[in-house]
Image (cartoon, rainbow, N blue to C red):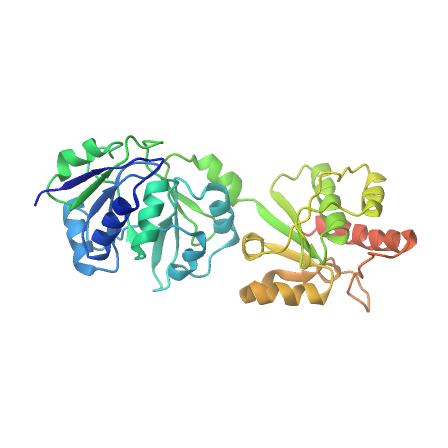
Length: 352
């Protein structure tokens, strides 16, 4: 078999070239493609014969699976289940990029997944619309190739197509992290260091949610961050969001004034609407009213075990566990709301 070579323009790839590579993958062929790390051998993992052929070429044990390469973060849940907040934080920090995450698979085993930061690779994966694996394009024991020419030294005639897009950006293999359980484990240190992985994975994320993300959740976030700083705590990330909000708005003037009295400047705050990604990457979600919890669980039903009313989590004994929205109310009402949230934060800082 003669291996066909396509030289592709990285900035303006021809659609016909992308389609040719994708069609070969759909039909069960093997295609060497660039990624951000090294060149890889792309294959359709749904085709058993193709995967057997790939294993033979790579001299890889047939019981050792290849990692999936995806184009969209949303597709992860097609292949993985029970994904931990730590895994979502790693995705947010390093995808697309040189990180392979090992997660719990839908077949009760484990699956490695990554999203490469490479325009050509992503275009081919999207166009193929099949589950693509892409191990490095080298024989076992040899260095992973950074150019198409290096890949062809040992693989000429063993694959149908090579997509040559010049030298890869990084030239080193991805870091592989088992994030299927805690603590996460670095299985192979590549471009991303173990220290960088642990800094993200071992943090916990606390998310405060209110309605407009302009007062209550802003107060809670600022006060908790202040308390954590006073206590020398660096292992917590604190976020805030609203269920009904136009993103990019500032905090209310009264909220700014109340926090200024505590030595806090929140002039840089910009509102954001709650979304699925925020919910999934958070370890603890603290809401002001039951309505907020209901809206969150519409987005991510499986988040039920980590969503709490802020008063409930702080163990404040009160017949009314809701913290009412002060928007449109006078300063003394705002001040009362602020006092309740401040008491809750004092307690929460000692719990988390």
